[in-house]
Image 1 (cartoon, rainbow, N blue to C red):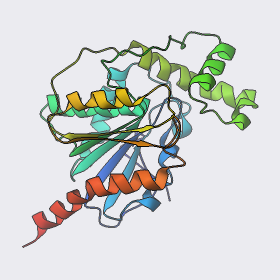
Image 2 (cartoon, rainbow, N blue to C red):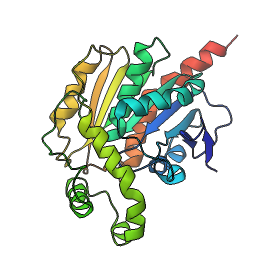
Image 3 (cartoon, rainbow, N blue to C red):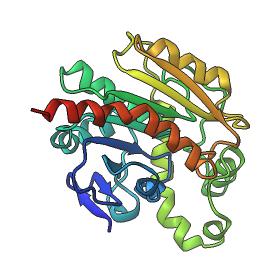
Image 4 (cartoon, rainbow, N blue to C red):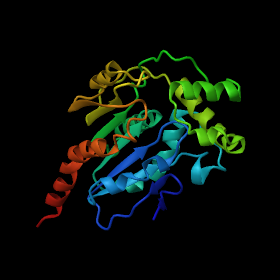
Length: 261
């Protein structure tokens, strides 16, 4: 059963009786916490999976979406901090990778607890410019065509329902505005490890964009590329989560040692 914690910001799609670590999952543009609905079934019981729910989608559909990355991070942190009582890690896909990274940096820069590991998926580091042109101010029709051309992430069933699209468009536009206006300079490397994931046929995030994440950490770093496009994480879910689980398994092992007499 799905449970809501941290106000409306955090969604648990499965409850863990005695978690030893937490994985916070950040969704891509236009999508919400349901992107990670199936993940708990593929991850160890020791790992509490919390999906981040930003305003303007799913159970927060009636709220105004946020169109600024810094504002998203600043508003999320008060809901997130009480849940950082266990060893934790962040996973972010596409836009979610950017928010996960900036949230981790904000925690680090404020002297707060930091993730033991950061997984970034299908996204380049924020200071690396992309080649795509801005689309958030296009007409609805042009905007949707361009989103589909780049990502192909909107199901045909949704595209055929104008009323549903009208409900989803504000959050989608706000997300793309946030992406298009967030251009920080390169900053000092972070102390936690980073794994960069991607799809082999993702034209928006080629292997070289994943490799650039190496400079963002002075801890361990790795890259893994799966078969598939920008949304490789759905067909490759089992393999992806085996990798995530293997990387994070020391967290609950270390937690168990800490509570041992």
